[in-house]
Picture 1: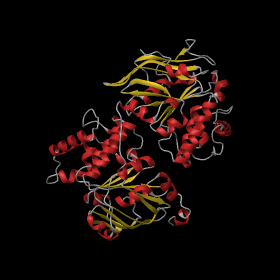
Picture 2 (picture 1 turned 45 degrees about the horizontal axis):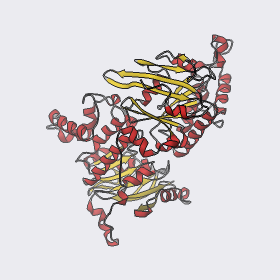
Picture 3 (picture 1 turned 120 degrees about the vertical axis):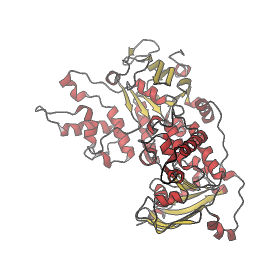
Length: 553
């Protein structure tokens, strides 16, 4: 077993070791999630846990916080002001959330575990509602307690507002505030002492946030660390790791790889540690592409692919026109609320109020009113939406059915499913897209996030799909899986598909795209190609002064 106090920890001057996970192993059925993992955490640090999907980082966080009971190993926490480098400390009871809470260990989940129909105050006090002498809920005291918790993080949040009316960023801040609650108000009634938070596990805290909300959350993380709390930060986003974290531990296939000081490591080395190999790529925009003559602009529509003219939707889009040629990847840039996802919804036929012309490989699927998603699929249009859980996958259908859904009518004979043909198609897609699943009868919920995303891509990226709409295709997946998704997208374009790509990650947008259209206020504010394809130019067009005036009515 590796030593519980790692080298990077010993190099950190004047930092106490507050928590150690020693020799942690955990299995789920036949799947080995963690194998003899030992990591130590310092007081007042932000410590990243990184790895590919399925590497075990979230499992380790849940073992530390008492959500999972480990099969082997221990979690120890130092006494107040103590140092595990010099004393044994307290061993946390395996799989006990209450014991971890009492020791000051909390977790903030990636999926918001909240009640949107209740107020902010009710959500913050839901685990321990204050009561009056008559035994009734004391709502005023709940609001006072909630205000005290939020005063430390975001005092502008209205504790009386229904939680569902808050932005995702503010909802995430409320969840972090809840982890700081000491339950001190109930101590007198229960005889239980108050317990301050000492270690907080943040599991992908920014996965669903806009850029400005991410910046605010990172500032809160830095503030909490400066106050002496230890933050265990699970994230795939390299920029956040290098921006906010002090140290980083990498896991691969459930095993410990390395712990490093962030200042002593660079991104390529970190990626290599995560996936066990080097990842390289050349931006598509840097390829030698045959320039299109001015007189060639008109015939572009006749070459197939996707053509959109004057597409509008009240409050969302205004007179958007674009074209994507076969074999081309066109990126769509812009800030949150610019209309990027709304554009893809309208093209596919999911917006009943959208009006305009949409043509797929010469087949008109919208002339004024859209013919609908079924006609889009018949025309060879595929759509990978932003949220694979709410919009993409069918979680009550198995892996095989999730892949075959769009092509079942084509494979059927006399109205009956041809299970043999389906099985061959599904087997080919699982192999080509390297989807890791126990069997084709497994449900999507049994797959890791990265494999869920590849399953969704496998559904749409077949030979029958000639135009592909991709909305945030790498959201919530790790670096290694991202590299594989990049390869699949480029391969689809190289095979002749026309790809329209939405991504909030500008390096990703620039890496994959042949050219970039920028939206602001529901309108196209510019097109970039060649040397003009830079982050600065995208931001300039996304924040044009006339964007607000151009917003659709």
